[in-house]
Length: 242
Length: 245
Image (cartoon, rainbow over all chains, first blue to last red):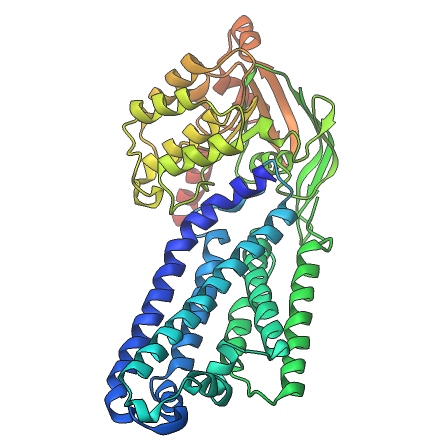
């Protein structure tokens, strides 16, 4: 296992700081939009102020843009830009398919980090909102109510909604694996382009309502199928192989 | 021993790059691989490294080349195979972890000799420095067989001369070099054997000591093997001149 982890080190080295920067920029933008809109909406009862803040701040759009950029960044270390890095990757004393799969797992962890950073951000912003809102307009349940009533917040933190939670987890795995598979295919001279369209669709379709069980299950089935197809694409025998 | 037996490679579209090629290269040899553009030099190296699909047999000490023994081969290419965004120091750490026989002392000595920066991303190097770094990595990997595909394209003559001298000075007796180049005259005193390819076949294979015994230069042998017609240019020019008149 050690050679594989070592082989992943350059990718991790080239990705982690960029992922952190994207998460920080997305957090900074969201916080800036949130604080700019805060004075207008503070004081609305039953968490509606918080719901509207999330919408006005464009939290979903910023999250989605960050996700697409992050997926692009994840594909770069394996791609051959300025040098045929694939010549080195393909002659390491490791099995390239295993390496690519583990690379996908590494990408998945980066995407999970991005998701967690967004959760942390909105919990912090919500806490700030609750502190600043007049005491008679908020309750201990305001945040929970906002998470149930706002599709984006609900998808970000799908409490007690296991299909949405499973969709998010499988979605991260699917995008992470796709970002590893794409440069793998490029290194072998194959045409592949799946990651960015998948990231775009994932970003657009991210918000789901609490009671939308069937659409959420359908999305889960689609991302699961995409993950399995991506893995099949990595592991199946290709005509150009020795 | 690196052995190629009946190796064939046909690209999509039908062009045959290697045609039932047989070749053996033993430990400690310094072999120059020559041939016109499209003769199959790069394809041969890529097949050895498993970067291209081929038919036939390629073995390293009678074993097929797999992830288990591929670390015994290293590769320096004019296309470059390093990570452009990483520094030399990061490459050193990566190679040290990946290749147990990594020659750290050689790496440091060569980096110092060529005055290459350790902390700068390789994409910021000049073309000559990139070539030098590519070759330094291949020489430092700790491989028994070092494959070089026109590694000095873009380097000046003094730089190349330095490299040949350094190579001869640092190589250990068991280290083997397969050097693909067009610079026949320049490498003739550096190599011990010349292999000539033409249309994917070995058309010449000679040691430099054989040539010395016969009183011939490598260039003469190359021209003779390829049936180079020295008067071809003058005949063509004469013909053109006559047509214009």
